Structure formats: structure tokens, C-alpha cells
Length: 125
Image 1 (cartoon, rainbow, N blue to C red):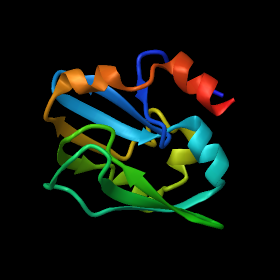
Image 2: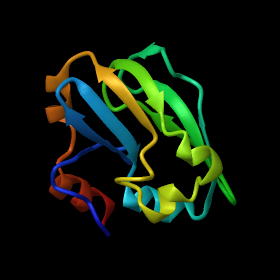
Image 3: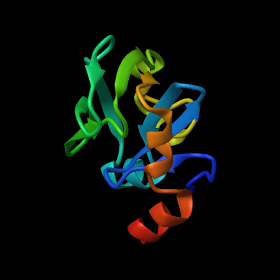
């Protein structure tokens, strides 16, 4: 499985890429593999300010629905509209085309407290 070194990860299987105070967030390669074929992504929090660990949406696979949790506090600014017509992008390219949201992070330093790729890989093996 692929866990890019430049990303940070949560125990709930989300990844985050920080650029300045803007973060892009999605689910990990491990998560999409465990979920199976993703058929729908529901993000209803655009414009909302949420705390770390709060629900920002759900992802629906053929056999299950999973909640998506915010890795750090901030304001959700954008959802990946490509996922409305092609939710399978999460399965095919979870770290690039399959991203889920972008947000303005309240405290960029909080991202560094998340798991690095080695720690995340050790957790899921």
C-alpha cells in the first residue's frame, strides 16, 4: 500500500496535505481498500468551521457507509465536485484526484502532531 511521506495521517484513516494554512484531505489507500468500491461521497460542511475530530461528511461503498472526520480544526472551503460524478476516483487515486475537501486550518502546527507515513503504516499492518 501507498502512504506518501509528505502527508500526515489520522487513526481514522484520513490523510492531510498542508500548503500554508490550506489543507487538502481525503481517505488513505488503506481506507479505500477496506471500504471496497466507493459509490457516493457526501460532503455537507462547506463553509462550516469545525473542531478536530468532527464529522465533515460520509463515504458510501457498496456494503457500508463510513463517517469522515476532520484531522484538525478549521473551516471547510471546498469539496471535490469531481467525486459527484466519479466517486471511484477515491479508489483509483486516493491522494490526488480522489481528494475530498480543502479547508483553512486554524492552527497549522496541529498537522505536525498527526501520524507520519511510517507510524501510519505500522498502525495498519
